[in-house]
Length: 407
Image (cartoon, rainbow, N blue to C red):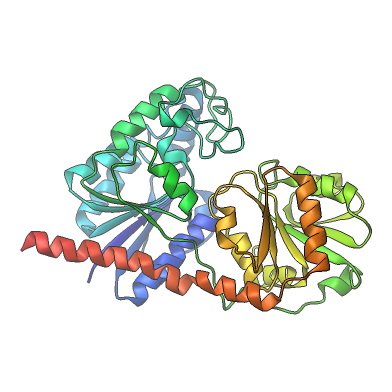
């Protein structure tokens, strides 16, 4: 039986759920899988069998504070990392599958020295750009390209993962030293857009494979509800937005501007807002707090006429897929990998930041509605049961190549 270790910063949210889905798919294919994540209150809220927690909350909080004050991200948690690596030596995984390594929970030089010394077979799924920048997970919105030559004078060092000082230049060179030179590592990206960036970065020495995120089509499907009746929207065209958290990056300001420009035929509904954000919305917008129930979310997608995703920087948002699976066309900006889930039969892509263009596209979709079956058929391309099998194929390739070397 082949053994895989998944390593991620959390066991919840988009990346945590992706890890759990990969784990379940691997188990169905007779793989043994350990899911590893840091000790935190949020991670402890979910009980996962055959899991390993890294360190403790005291060491994690200390790491976060030291990194914030020094700008040296991922250089602490020595004891928790040492304990984790000792467990790995006992488990002896065939493949180590890395996901998000940021957010200060593991000592990165120790981890990568161990991977190199053990000649581990590694798969690293990048959910953002953090692995090849000196600091930030995203740079598309501000148009920064310093990551191509060496980060310095970082305009976002106060943003996540926040620091008091700009240490991006040092971190860029340290990451390049740590992350390069792994003998057998495959980079996986959920979008072609991110794959193209990786090939321009210091990670270009590694093979890059695109595996789009998948969704559960047994949950995200047309689902009737009383939402329209509850909010008296029977005669309205519902424009839905879903994010958590909402910010300028996710296009909250775009929705507010559209609310000023659209006529009374339309109703904007936003899901995932905080109480403060809900209270600050214009009177003609409906705000709903975040729902952790995917079936409730499917009802909202189904009730909507158009799903709007005015994100200004994103890798491959699964919300687009979820909306399509519920039969709702998608309207998004030409941003990152967001357009990759669409074709001309299920949505429209407009230039990033073009609010007028988005307004015109809304009118086009109202006057010439897209057949919901076209959206549903497009979503079938992203069935998680098929997408995550691509990871199993990678694990199998690692197993077969390891057998060849041992012979």
